[in-house]
Length: 155
Image (cartoon, rainbow, N blue to C red):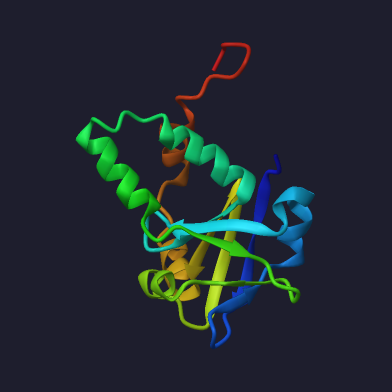
């Protein structure tokens, strides 16, 4: 499993296609360079998953108890708009029109790769979000990361 990293500015053509940057493709395992799944992100963005990561997430979600109403609601919203994508001969991926509209994508996008996923943002939305960095990033880091213990148990 690859761990993805980086920010990439891309352009979307009139048909909704963008070129997958070579910097991302190099980070992917051979088995993950052709097939992806895209769906709605948790904010007004899209999330692109390599096929192997999508299969793992699907396996986790399929283990949920669907007799629980909140679980069913989560599954419906999580899978809403999920679409399988295949890279074409020009290294392009075609974004579905409904997802383009959802994320407010026009011509410019930012691919934000981390872990095993790639967030796709309308460039203006991404820049606005990143410009609103918390006044005290150190406090946020402490609140979020301070709960993680290292392997030696002294954290």
